Length: 291
Image: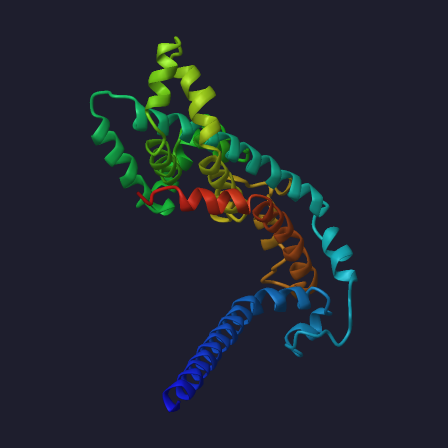
């Protein structure tokens, strides 16, 4: 009888200890998440504070609620802020189309075609991933200056059409290699060539990898500051990151309130695009390169 009475008590203690550990883990994760979110929450709060209050009262709750930062920031620069949003949208759309077309075609060639030097070219492509942009920006600038492309969107879009992002090529190669080759052979029996196999079989099945490429391209291009600062020189061509930089003036007082307000506006498309494609992003990462 003593043994039968002790067993339920032991089981109850173990269950209680397990629940306590789980509770502590959840509390730790919530705390870590709040620490990670604090800079974003601080920026959102500061967008509703007067500039003089932002650094004087660093709390998250504004003492003086100032929604006028958004209207002031929207018209504070030489052009309304939607002008810079439109410029960024043009660059992002061109970059996404370029990466989807160029990288998918290069990936199909590496994954399905046999040609001389394939392994060498693939190794060179992988080596380009390790090259920092600072190494290639000077020769790129000289080339684009000779072509007369400086202060246009062409240097930011045209290279994408030429499959210059090795990371996305590698991602798609790994995904296409996981597709059964029996589909290609069945299509060839029906008289399909590489073009029809690529567009009618490989591309529809590669939707998760394409969505992952589109999402990462959107985020990286939208937030890109360095290359856009180099190639875009006139204010009417500025994109969102470069326009935000103009709020900071070293010779006069910086309008921190409008700057944070427009930073919040600039984050909106990134969050929206990420949330819209999150399902495909998780699926693409889970099924690509883990083989």
